[in-house]
Length: 275
Ligand code: SF4
Ligand code: SF4
Image 1 (tube, rainbow, N blue to C red):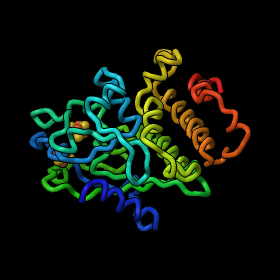
Image 2: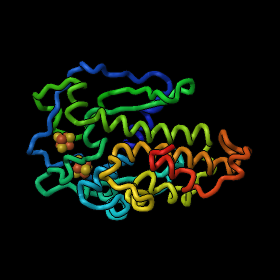
Image 3: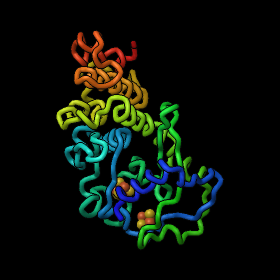
Image 4: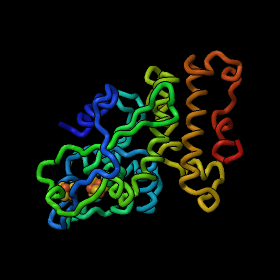
């Protein structure tokens, strides 16, 4: 079963309330021994979210756009019709960042899913309270040949999340997931999302350097995390406008939608922090 299949399975269990949630004090044993040559980093689907991409790009000293061109597949997902980014080399063989001795070249900036294993996490947004994601934490199925479970090193779930900096990754990832959820449910984006729209979204999702350069917002003035939050808000506004122009979403048919000027002009104040 591929990781996508496993993920779909957990999403189904989450939707029908059969997915258990591990408490933060649940104890498990795990540690990667140095003898493991990164078995899990070959022929594996690693999907990246926007915070993963910009963290990895910064770690490598390149732009988000360069990172995607060099290391990723970028496209529209079949199920959600939302732009996705996947590590290209890892899908077909060894990950581009797997070193010969089995270590990860980008370990401090490794993606959310790499840092979480063997823990999995599923999130859903309830219709009555879409601002509050509901999470479930669980142990993923053991990978064949993985030596990590033989370790005597004990962790609580809470310790694992803290040690892997997952609280921050999850918080930022959820902002993106909330946007996907809003677009799919409120704007019915699956009916009109097109690859050209995905290209327009790329700077907001994965290439913040383009927006910073265009609007003159240096990293010294606005932190990466703050700019990420602004980008997610700006993209929500932008997609609402695009949807309205096509007759979808809360602004469809309004005068506001009909008189929309340049989309970039509409989101400029959000990105500049002067909404
Ligand atoms: S980013 Fe690092 S941990 Fe993740 S698959 Fe690649 S080599 Fe492995
Ligand atoms: S998670 Fe398992 S397979 Fe991957 S490096 Fe650790 S011990 Fe090896």
